[in-house]
Structure formats: structure tokens, C-alpha cells
Length: 368
Image (tube, rainbow, N blue to C red):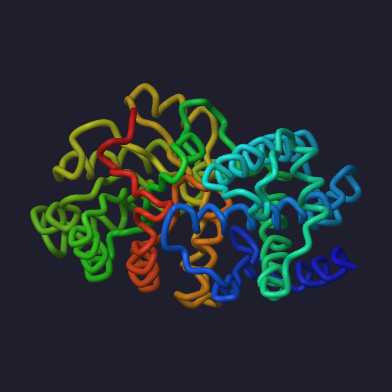
């Protein structure tokens, strides 16, 4: 029945880079505020178990079933199976990390040493009455999140994305320490909105990474001047998003797009060292990665997509999505866009989790 519902939705929905309907739900259904590391871990254990239940309940064992689930003609079974194996390893590790603050006889605190044990735990999980509404909403959330992830994995690497790396030099965010998250913003500058976000970040002593679109950067420099734009990013870090917001996997002039933006960044004093590159839509190829290496630059992807660009999601829904994925992944790189007004509201609110299971990564400390 779940396949039918998803397929009917998919067939009546148009796609840009991803599905229009995305995973989000009301986090007030979780009955305990996240006020310290222990409450963060407790919520994390429950979200992981909920997602695992969706994974083991969804049959992706054959090409026919995978095609039905992701509604794509072309799929790569090997890519999807690789994603499944890696995801299982990560979820098991995350669950074990979330158990470190367990108290005696607390729910979901029995030893889990393998994926099969975690799968069994999730299959047998019965939420207490007070959490039944949360669990129902969480299952819906993860049914769509699983679709988002499986869809990307099934078409990789024909269409590359953040779902996997092409080279060990690329960063997704999964290699951070438990509880570490880097805030990143794409597509700017858009002067007034970027200024509002960077000013807020400075006040809160958060050092984020901004991936600038060369076309927007050139226009902003022409309008506001080099010094004003440089001051805009004071306390933050700057990377490249290419000159044009087009797939750099398919863009013939990808090298020109990269070089032009890199030169703008360097010539205007926005970055004096090597440059992180975030390809639009996460789409790139190995030749591009190898070219970056000759310059000392690297690709940075993400593992938590806020979907803040989505018109159907208000700031509260975006925040709820991000928190849920932070509880699930327990570390990573969060994707926002400083050209959209909802980002500042969400990040401002998320900062309440700082020191309560969440630590913001200082962009200037990122290894090369």
C-alpha cells in the first residue's frame, strides 16, 4: 500500500533537483525538550530506531522493486546497495553513540552490537502511549526521507549528488566527531539577507562557511564595492559555488565557471588560502575533482539538507526537519541558503541546542 501512495504522489509531482514534498513533521509531538546531552541522546535513539524500522520495512531487494519505489527508469543497484551498507554501518554507530548516556533500565538501552540486532530492536519497538503520535509522525517523516535518499543513491553516479563521494578528498560531514555540525550557506551574496545572517552569526560567535555564486558576487562587488563585501563575511569563511548555478557535471564550461569565481574570491580578499568548492546540486565529475586538487582545493558536499528553498515549508517545518536529521546523523554539514529569508530564523532558533548535544564547527578549523 505504501508503494502505491508514494508512486501516485511521485507521478503527479514535478521535480527540479529533488522531490517537492519533503520529509518534515511537528517536533512538538516529542514530549521532552532537548535541554542537555542526555535528552539529545534519548531523542536520537528513538529517531534512529524509527528510521531503521522504515528501512527494514521497505523491500529494495530487486531491480523491479527499487524502480517501483524511486519511480525511475534508470537505476544503479550496485550504488543503492552500497548506500544501504554504508547507511547501516552509520546508523549502528550512531545508535551506540546515543546509548553512552543511558541510565539503568531506560528504554532502547540494551546492548546492540550488530545491524541485525538493531533491526530486530526496531521491528519489536512499541512506543508508549505518550509517544504514539510522535511515532506515527516520525514514520511518515522517514518514509519520505528514505525515498529522498534511495532516489539519489539509485541514480548515482550517472547523476552525482551529495549522497556519495567520487573521491576520498571530498567531504560530506560524516567524518566529524559526534555532535559536531558545520553551518553552510549557498548562492549568495544577496547583500541585505547575507548581511542579516552574518551579523547574527557574529553576535552568536558562530563561524559558518558561505559558498558564493560568482555571478552574484560580481554584481555585489560592482554595486557595493570590494571593502563592503569583504566586511560582509567578517568572522565567516568563503568558498566557491561556481559562477553559474548550473550542474557542473554537465556544464561544458565548468572550468571557466570555477576559475572565474575563484579569481573573484582571491582578488577581492575573501579567501587567502585554498578554496572549498560546493558544486550546484552536488553535481560534479572526477575530472573536476582532479583539477581542484592541482589548485589545492577540494569539494565540500553536505549530509543534512534543510530544504530552506522550498516554498511549501515554513521556518518551523524547516527547523523541525533539520533537528530530526541532526538527531539521526549526530554530526555533519548542514546546507542552508543565505538568499532565502527563512534561513536566519531557523539558524537563530537552532542555536539553542548549542552545548546540548550540538557543537558548531568553526569554519576556519576545517582541515585541508
